[in-house]
Length: 66
Image (cartoon, rainbow, N blue to C red; front, side, top):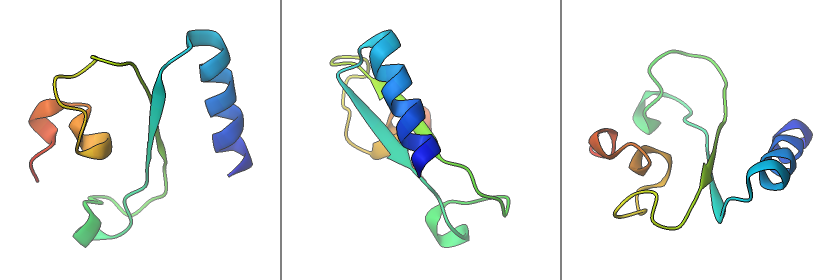
């Protein structure tokens, strides 16, 4: 968790996003396709996508339906 927050602080300082999506998929029912651990940390800006609902998959519109 400490590394995640350090990465978030760095991205905030360097790029000044309006917000972040943070996501973790655990097990197939949650969308995990290969058993491993990784965290999505996605800087977001107001208006970067038409409809920001949908979490990390909503960042890439064609991936938001699963």
